[in-house]
Length: 352
View 1: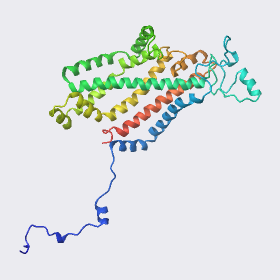
View 2: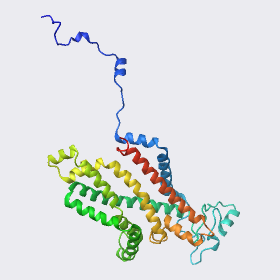
View 3: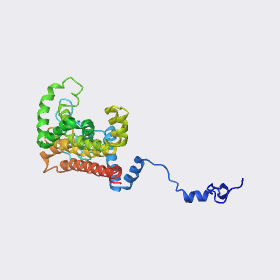
View 4: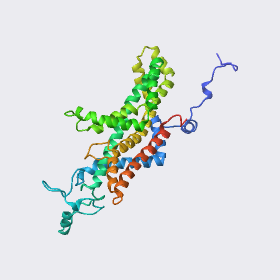
């Protein structure tokens, strides 16, 4: 039967296959991408954040590899021999100066590694002490931020998901800690823990870490997690009403599974950014506690203890105070700028 003119059926003979040029014109081919790739592209376009990241990488690599080939140790008193006092010619050397024995070796043609930053009042090479001090400050900042992240993530997730009385109790604890004067509480806790932990950790694995360093981590874990907890709680409250969370609840999934598999992965960008911005605060806190004598145990240096020791000869050896102060400022500034760059690149609300 012939096809009627007014039929609604489509005649396939009226269509021709599209050519390759037509397909390229009509279909815009775009390579697949992810949230992480888009964020990294935006981060690489931020020159300030990129420079800050390069500076941090150089500092970290220097702290790791320089002590491997540097001929002096951070606690080595140059010119000291068994049963004899330290050679006075090695005390308070200025940059690129040498002690008596080193000058004799140079005169005889033996090459002597220079003291780039001179030596301190005990005859120890100041450059390697600054390197170890930077390493200690970075380690304290990283591990303290990790402690803050774990506690804040746990408390914030429970408070945001459970709500009700649990949320009220946890947030009132947060409000109480927020109301305490930070600096005063940190100094008081550090002073008390320094006295009480000394005998408690003798003969344990924490003895090498030292009571001062252990008290620093306890202070961070006790006081600095509240901001992270509030941030995570706000994120969990906003995610709790999403459809995929309601679907998981309807299927009978446990709260811990929903938080672990659905909510926390959707907060990863905010968590990373906040942790990166927490590290400078931890470094600065460790520095001023070490400056007050509540930081790392001697002879292990930190940037704060180096600055504190430099006060004794500030009029004669000003550079000893300037060097650790500049390193602290450079690390804190680079971390803050890099954290701001991460926030601009990965925060979906800023890129909406």
